[in-house]
Length: 180
Image 1 (tube, rainbow, N blue to C red):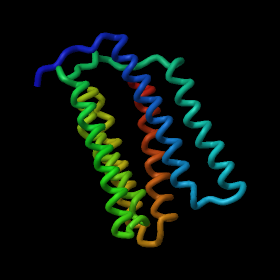
Image 2 (image 1 turned 180 degrees about the vertical axis):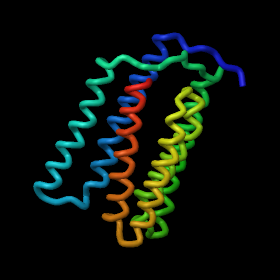
Image 3 (image 1 turned 135 degrees about the vertical axis):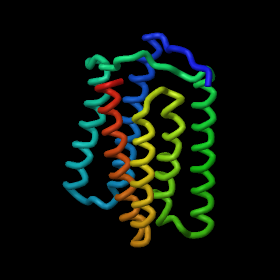
Image 4 (image 1 turned 90 degrees about the horizontal axis):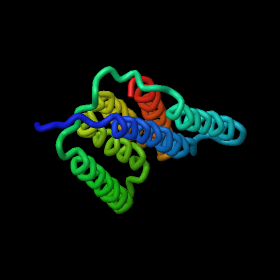
């Protein structure tokens, strides 16, 4: 595969965008899983989740990357990224339609987490970020847990997939922040 060395500014931008995406979607997955929480527990959990996400966004501008080598990107990395994002969106839309049509909405949060997790695996080489492979594996596992939890209803399935995916994304955000 033909590659090129990403300029420093491009590499910093990828690091920043990756951390911010993990922060934003980490909070989204937390909110998705939080349907199981009630009253003050929900608000405390939300405040903590928001603090983690905001902390990541603020830190990405203040913490220097410890990356020891230049980022080597495939020649057509942008096209690969676009293809995998489009594939993810189409699969999620199909999953929503299919789960609704078959009255399997209890499994939907887990199925979506599996799809999102699997989309991270090919992004690892596209961004020269090996951590994304582990993000993909861990988020797929959280999604499978959510599918299993869906046997007891959407609240439990959503909580497992949502909280699990949030932790995976925040952990990835902190790892990329540190090593970038």
